[in-house]
Image (cartoon, rainbow, N blue to C red):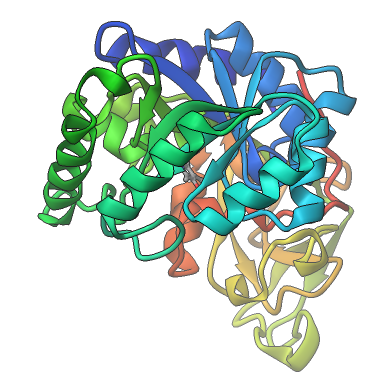
Length: 359
Ligand SMILES: *Cc1c(COP(=O)(O)O)cnc(C)c1O
């Protein structure tokens, strides 16, 4: 994990921002698998003024690691979660009265809340702007509660052809406008990474960028096209090289057999590490600076690659599953494409067994 890339991606994102808008670095799910505390620090060095996580436990973990600054817990909270979030001195998100009451009951110190309007995500937040306004008033006058922000979240920012984002933006703007100047002292925020790239009208006072700070492309394209630098490389090594005769097979179920004599390398990584079984016979691995087809079934702890008949590859040679080697590169977006999923899921799926090395 290259932390300088996280720092640089944050700096790059900040250059895009509407004047005065701040960057909130989203480090939920262990920093999208990259290591939450390490990436939080790197993001702060890159100018992120806020951090965001999904759960109270994640906020507590950041504090345990000695991370300071504003932290927003974006997800739903039980009463116990709320206590934990407040102990971590985090801001929380509210969208109904019941929630506000439970917060007040818990409060030892002023609780900073962000009112969430669901403008079309259909998930958390209230859809009713009258209810959101009432909640705003209640939070504003409640002792021990400090109204800190207004927020919404976009459903289709990653799809430039979809008009839904414009509609969500209109609803959110209408809500903010109805509050008159009273929103001026609050942090108004809506954009995720994709919306941050798409339209400065989405920036408001702060953007919440996750995937982009890790150098992953929110549109599933080559991150370099948007000046993003992937922080993550997934590396292993060739543990064994074997000569195969035509007809010999590699792996469970004999799902690949050598058509002609060749050499097969075994690499100690598998679905137990998050290298998904659906990649069986269906991806490349970089060895010796070249793409090698992964052949046979991905097992829990190993995969096999076809090195060709005259290979110079030896046990101990480096293998790169995501990242660069020589002139070649395998992007996380490529792996996601093969799995018919998004880059987010690939990095979040890397299991704890994969040793995280930060440099
Ligand atoms: C995860 C999340 C983000 C970050 O989204 P990216 O697409 O990774 O930038 C922003 N806002 C909310 C509410 C989120 O849950």
